[in-house]
Image 1 (cartoon, rainbow, N blue to C red):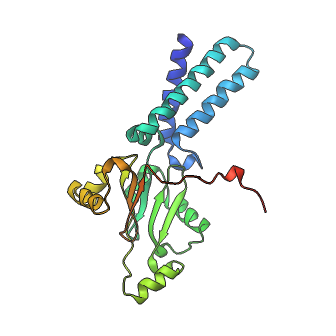
Image 2: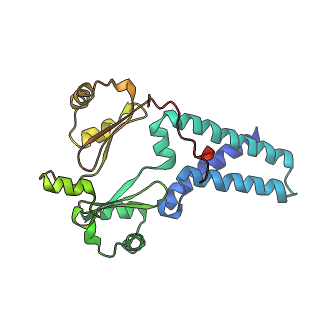
Image 3: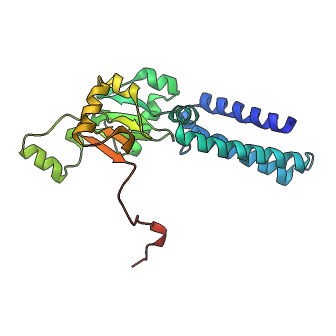
Length: 240
């Protein structure tokens, strides 16, 4: 029982430390991945090399932590709030071409680091950036201003038909079948408006797995039933 309690306490403490360290220290891992990796590695290393500690106790600790990780994985699949707490959430650091200094400060993310991340994406002039988001894995995602993007056939069509619009940040409306009320409220969208959009498409809320308003203002809905009889399995594809 003492080993189980110590293992649970270690999990909680390392999660707190990971959050204090900030996203940019985690490279390609989320908070949860970071904690899981170092804790399992440490316990496994002790089982292999630390003869001063009983292997039975360390095995109990490893199995306990593995059980915690498994239960957490199951619960987070159904709970967006728990996912956000464990892994954090993306943070906007540039919005409408403006650097959000307070967000950088909260993330312990310096302007030098921001410039470096942009240069790695071949962006040497920050004025080219419309939006920049620090993702869960510590990577920076960038949406350039319209005049600095590569032109596609759709862009040419929009220009020729006078349909070009100013880009906006994509807003997630439904995730895992649940309405993201905070996003809708922040952007002035009402539940009635969403219900109307669903009704116009002949959809019910319980049918929708994911919905987002894209950068051009268009709505995208992904349903639980995809009606794909034979999904592609990359592992079974034959090489030419």
